[in-house]
Image 1: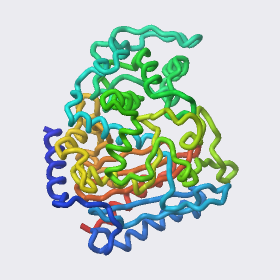
Image 2: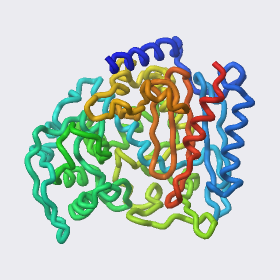
Image 3: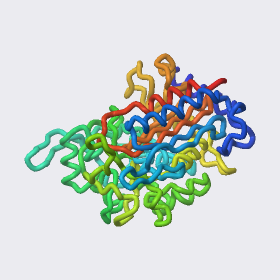
Image 4: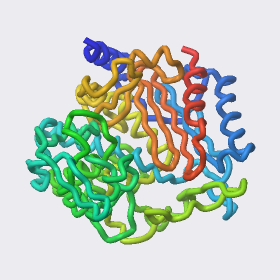
Length: 427
């Protein structure tokens, strides 16, 4: 019954909000007609500027769209403090895990074409995943392990919903999996090394799982596996599929795994604080310049893309439009409802305010009482380098706040930004 109520909300929001010609995401000609209070919009601008003035963030770009019109798109602070480079509205950010929703969209485009079923075992297309095992014992001395046969195969739906049992290597919460992935040569997140997504995924397939597939949510490299699946099913390199089938139709002109030389100077530096000053974040398990240097061969479906606030807003507006933008139908409204639904009731606490659909974290009725999270059906996520976004299908509003920091204490700008956006709506 709860799922039915959620789907009805989504169906109604799409039916009421999408005109015969879908909103194309253009600058607002009259903010008063967008449902946003101009005086309250000024609060958001003041909030963003205060983070820079108080040295809490080096800089940011924010974008707010209401009913298909951009009501705020502004840059604050510096893109690179040490280099004296001012932040610009067209700055390019490493969006990391915001890549996941784009990969999931590509997967669902192929699903609509009948290329696979959501509950197909992934081993049907990547045989190395046949007969998965769940971790039983681990030897920290040499990272060797034993496993027991899993009760079921990993499905494509499991991979989309982070319920496959796969882990996340270097950022995994379980040290055993960090060590196993490293020993096996699995590439996590980003790299400048000459490796392909297929090579890394096949190594991953030989490793044990955290738990039985479908049993619980464990954030994972499942979307990297699915990026490789897109290559197999489409017969195209993953970067080319996204460029031709998604980015070009949506007008996403600044979204890439690896930036062309003509755009490399727009990439924002990853910054951290040292003695109260903003300095370059040091290389850790990856080269921070990965979008512009190296082999440029690893198309990470889970974390590899870089983009602008405007490009990502176009992607989100396509969803709010029921799957279309710029005269192109990317997904059907029916498929979007499937993407937003909760595939695994047993995975989530009944009191949770959200679930994870096939591409996004999605709010439910419980979110309303908490406040500041949007309407039921609002979908959102963020990225490793401090970027966040949300889109509300009922209010028809998009909010994007992009920063580029690591190694600093958790800061609440993303949550405050979201709260102020919703408080600025006047209808």
